[in-house]
Length: 339
Image (cartoon, rainbow, N blue to C red; front, top):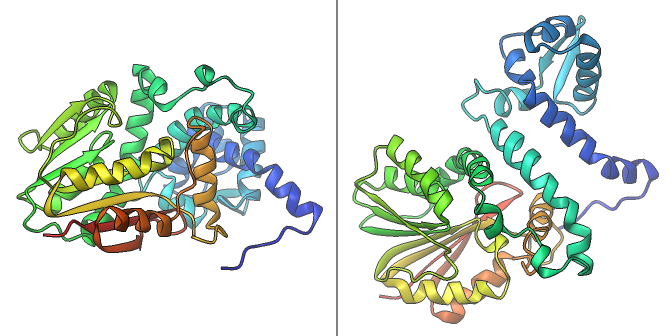
C-alpha cells in the first residue's frame, strides 16, 4: 500500500491545524447548522435568527465550514455539502452527528490533552484517566454510551449480514456497551439470546435501549468489568467490538484464549475493532483512532488483522476470516471453534 509523503510547509500546516477544522465541524453540530440547512439554502442572517447567535459569529463559522468543504456557498446562501447532508443532519437516515458532537468533541478531545505525558511516561500510572475510571462517572458514562450506541448500529448491521449465526442460540457480547451490536444480531437471528458484559453505569443505560427494542426477554446484563469477571461458558457465539483497542495489549491474547474456552464446539468468535494493515502503512483513520485510545490506555497495542488472525489460530480457531467493516477504519476478524 502506498502512503502520501508530506513534502511542503503547506501540507504540514494543514495537518497541524486539522484540529481547528474538527472544532469548526463540532461547532456547526452544536448549533445544529446542518439540520437547519437540510430544509434548504439559507443566508447567514437567516441562520443567525434560527440559532439565536449574532450574525458576525455565524459569518465566521460558515466561512470556515465552507473552507473545509462541509457547506457550499452560492447566491449569498449556504447549503449542505452531500456528506454533511447525509451524515450530519439530524433528519438524515445515516446521521451520526451526536456521536461526533458528544463523544468525540466532549470526551475524546479532552483525553488527548494527556497524550504527550502518556507517551513519554511522565504521567504517573494512577493519574492516567483510564476507561474504567471514566465509566465510573454516571454522567460521563451516559454521554459516551448514548453517542456510541448511535455509532454502533450501522456496523452491527454489517456484522449481522457478514457472519452466519443461523442455528446459534446464545451470544456473549463482551464489552457490549448499550447493546447496539446485540440488537442488530438478535434482529437478524430470531432464535438468538444475548448476555452483555459491561460496567454497571453502562449496563443501566443499555437496559433502556434493550427495553426500547422490546428485547428484554432475550437479553441479560452482567454489570461488571469484562477483564475480571467470569464469563458464561458453552456459548454459540462471542462478540468483542471496540474492546481490544481500549485494553492493555497483553490482555488481548488472553481474551482470545478465554473466548475459545467459553465457546461451545462449533461456536464462532467475532472481533470488530480499529485495525491497521499488517505493514502499518495505513489506513490513516484507523491509526489515528488507535493513537487516541492510547491517551487513556497507555498499554494498548496497535492491532493488525494479520496478528489477530495468528493469535486465533494459535489457540485452535479455524476458518479465520478478515472482513472490512467500516472502510478505512475497522475490520471484523471472525473464526470458528472446531466441532
